[in-house]
Amino acid sequence: MEIPVRIGQRVTLLIHGITHDAEGVGRLQGFAVFVPEAIPGDEVEAEVISVKKQYARALIYRILKESPDRVTPLCSHYHECGGCQLMHASYQAQLRYKRQQVESALKRIGGLEGVVVHETLGMANSANYRNKAQFPVGMQAGRIAAGCFKPRSHDIVDIASCGIQHDANNRALVFAKELAQKYKISVYDERLHEGLLRHILVKHAFSTNETMVVFVINGESLPQGEKIAEELMSRLTSVVSVQINTNKRPSNVILGPETKLIAGRDYIIDELDGLKFKISARSFYQVNPAQTKVLYGKAREYAALTGRESVFDLYCGVGTIALFMAAHAKHVIGIEIVPEAIRDAEENAHLNRITNTEFICGAAEDVVPRLIKQGQRPDVYIVDPPRTGCDEKLLATIAANKPDRLVYVSCNPATLARDLKYLSERGFAVVEVQPVDMFPHTSHVECVVLMSRVKE
Image (cartoon, rainbow, N blue to C red; front, side, top):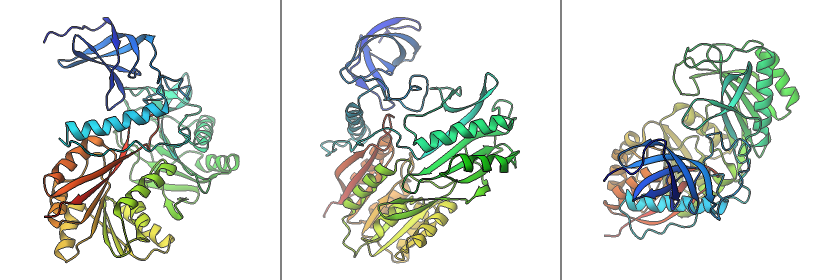
């Protein structure tokens, strides 16, 4: 097929679809053209910026006809910032796109037809939902800037107020920048690997109104650190923890291995569904507490626990799902490869006086076969893997173990579809899939899936 476009050419496109990373899809003589910030129903004039064998990418030059789903973004930084991808679409349209993304992955990658995919569970208020901010730091016109990177670059958009961050995070970011400027803290240059301040990390507990501020630095100490902490905590009364994290690696990894307390305590406490969670600087904790209750509540519903079941919670993190399940199960074992997360999980169980959980540090694909050899056979498996999905060795172990139910919590429809295909070919059936919008205004979608063993 001859490619009908060239770089620099302006083309008129009717947008009929949307990709998994929220770029509009138009076609010119059958050739796909992907257009950021275009949505189905738009008619656009766009300038081609790159051409591949199978597709081209183009940027909107002007919108000839707006989609009925197009809206004004709620954040003033949206068009230059790469943090969100769908804020120009109505929230109801976003929820539709995310359901379609899941359905498409299940069919295209998983070869799964006729699977029940429910409508995406969204939020009543989709603004200011994030409890965590990780802002890179740079210099602009002689002043310290911090915010998000522009799309496909490491150029920083200096942000005064992010539309999806909790107001406490926005206030802490602005004042932390002011203090770094006031005390002349040098800023890290990733090209030269010089300078001190790399990121400002802020975490906020919605239920307790506690805030943590962490300065990620290319060094061992923060000059005037105690003064900075004192001013932060006196100006912003929600700040109960100020820390530094040392990251000397010349990489894009945000946090380093060592965190030191400057003032306050080294954790904040949040509450979810009547449970308390201790959150440290390096803890994994879902960033949208309102939707976390929805996500884990659906997982608990699918687990259908009666109080007699043994449960394995794999990739358990700080034990959030395990503790959600504990009151409804006989025994829950959580398995996680990150030692700090296991320590947090054990502390969280102790904090909530939960005694029927056990947490084991190790790779799930190694620990589960060992437990089964020791005679442990869970009735229900719950898996919540990273974006890469489950290890195939683990899936093989689960399939051979033949539990009655498997609940799969996924943050990546593509690897979810791959894993469901594997299990569907080995004695399991997908009962239903529930998408949950954990990250409004972005292209990301989480799912909870119920699988059951096919009776022989």
